[in-house]
Amino acid sequence: MSAKHVKGNVGKALDKAMETGGGVLRLAPNWVPRSFLHPGRRIKLDPRDWYALGGNRGGIDERWFASTTEAANDGRTWDEGLSYVVCGRQKFLLRDAVAEGGESVVGKRIWKKYKRWPVYSKFFDNMGPIPHHMHQQHKHAKLVGQEGKPESYYFSPQMNNVDNNFAYTFMGLEPGTTKDDVRKCLENWNQGDNGILDLARAYRLKRGTGWLIPPGVLHAPGSLCTYEPQWGSDVFGMYQSLVEGRIVPWDLLVKDVPRSKKKDLDYIIDMLDWDKNVDPHFKEHNYLEPVLDKKASCPGCTDKWICYGQVDGEHLFPAKELTLAPGAKCVLKDGAASGWITVQGCGRIGKLRLQTPAMIRFGELTEDEVFITAQAAAAGVEVENTGKEPLVSLRYFGPGLQGVPNVGDYRKQ
Image (cartoon, rainbow, N blue to C red):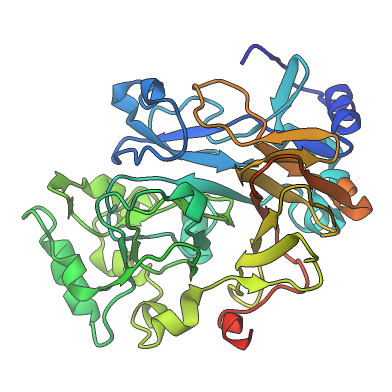
């Protein structure tokens, strides 16, 4: 991308971008590698660029959307995980735009409480399963200067033309599992497979559905490409020592553990939300299917909730899937900021063109991603399908949005 990076005071650049897009900001693709994972090859990154940051950094198997959260990778670039706004020949961090624009960008409620955009989403795209792991609860993450991380999943049909190697996800622990059972797995870490998956059950992944994963809950994501709205943190702990024949180092278990606790098995086990892990009704309490938003839908336009449900009594990062038939138009009246990614078709959002790419070179600008600011959302944003196939997009919101369904509400339709 040849755009010049505006640093420091981005006020003038933000004003120009807001005017150009009518409050809708164009975002550049934001690629993140993982040294311990194998790219699933479905997020449209050119095959020549799977290892664009170097083989030592690992393959790129994630694309982050509307992110002001840094990726917690060893050897990371200074801006890894951070999204850029692009306008003409200028670019600047969305994080700086939020700091400059405040409530006009993220909304009064979010700005007052968080003074930032506290969530992000991504495509996670792996060839096979990844280790049974959890994201710390806030009380544990706080001890290492981080925040806890709940997250949610949606398996977009457009992003899953193939299953790859293992389209099943282990979640939680089998009811009746004891802490001593988990302790034995940790004690056997250096003996190859520590057997943690023997204590869990796997669920077959289904396109067009999703899951809510609270912090402290073990999960070993399978090989469907996953859209993941989540809290703005990159903490985790891997509890599985061997995946597809590859050793998982102890360091990835205790990456976000206080120095004095890195060998403390009691502490490591206590990081798990035990009741939620051994919940005998885990699927009932965490499985999601789309819920039609009748008020936001109209002929030629279908708007569905795809990620929803409360974590500790609050909807933190709900998400929707919008589908417009060829030639259809609608006006989004969300009343709240959101991060948008287009997954099929072409069209227009406000003043900006939308186009779903077939292949993307690393560093290349696309026309598939935008951030709808609170200012634009309050006024209403027109979306139009100008193509001959459905225009399909995913968009996620921040905490506090009203009218969001609860887990299980899909059964009421």
